[in-house]
Length: 96
Image (cartoon, rainbow, N blue to C red; front, side, top):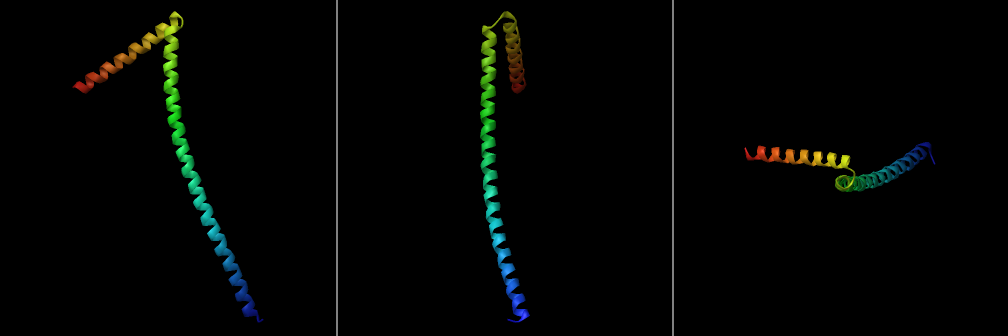
């Protein structure tokens, strides 16, 4: 085999190897995008779960405060009064 043919064969082999690597990288890229999308959905669900748990926690804190000692009751009543006041102000603003 002459040197030119050897060079062309070597070049063809290297080119084929690069094409295979490129195709493998494309597949890996697609898999990574799928993983990212799955993780985004998991994060969204986790945030929703967290918000629901925080809401439940606040309810339990209020319920506990209403049944606990007098200092906690005063704080809970003050908090409830503030919330009612805020709701009243919001309703007044909407009525305007």
